[in-house]
Length: 400
Image (cartoon, rainbow, N blue to C red):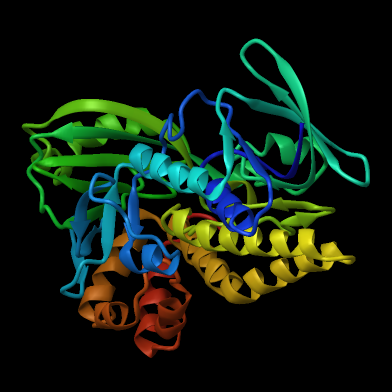
């Protein structure tokens, strides 16, 4: 079988890239190793309203579980800051339903999606790529002019061809439960920073509506064990969940690093988690990864339509997305690295000073859930931030 574009992985990045390529009349095949789109799900499902709009998407009601207007951030000692601007900031989505809805949009654009189809290897013979596909009861080879690798955090295919991949040090194990009978604000996300609970990252509570919530954490190790302990022993969280019962639990990986050094090869593009295009501060990658994926799809289509020099369109794609997003991604990485290196005393100092020195107002005014570089730059230019940083940096546990 032949195609213009082979896409590895039917997550949001792979699907969005496929839509933009197929909408220009190119034959696009997506291969998904799992039997069903969206399963297993790993995501916390919090997507900014502005980001969804920028992706050109209008979510159907059956995908949206809740809306949130802000976040309350807790320090280890229980100090907190509230960040909200009186408007809906984010959708809480059912990720399985979201992915399937995207897949349906791709199907209507002409994309063919094959599930239970694992790409075991790809080979470049200079004029085209050959993808080896393993299915339930058969094997096949697909030749295509372009390959989009959207395989996710494993990066198996990238490593197999000697391409750049997300390093292990940028990956943190995560686990979360969905619970009912939760006593929490229906429109506020809660974030708990505490090295006894989630060393290197944080614990979250995302309200799903109707007294349900998604509660999880990422940490350097033992995420599931740490989450169970937090639910039972954290002084604030245990009150929220004292009457709660678990409906289901699921794990995954949170990325806290920078994008890979290069996202294009010879007629080859890497997008989404496989490219490390995520917000290191939160691990979220659907919006920014989606933007890059859509751009990739557009430039892949242009490269296929070029009489010659198709590779230059891919090189242009790389330059455009890095110029647009790399400053934000780099600043978010540096902030996460700093916060992840603070002791509990340092976290208390930083969160306490953010409230006492009036830094929250800057976040409210300049904040963007996805492109956090702007607010980080504003804060760094504020002498009060410098003062807060000097106080907190005394409590670094490891050198940066």
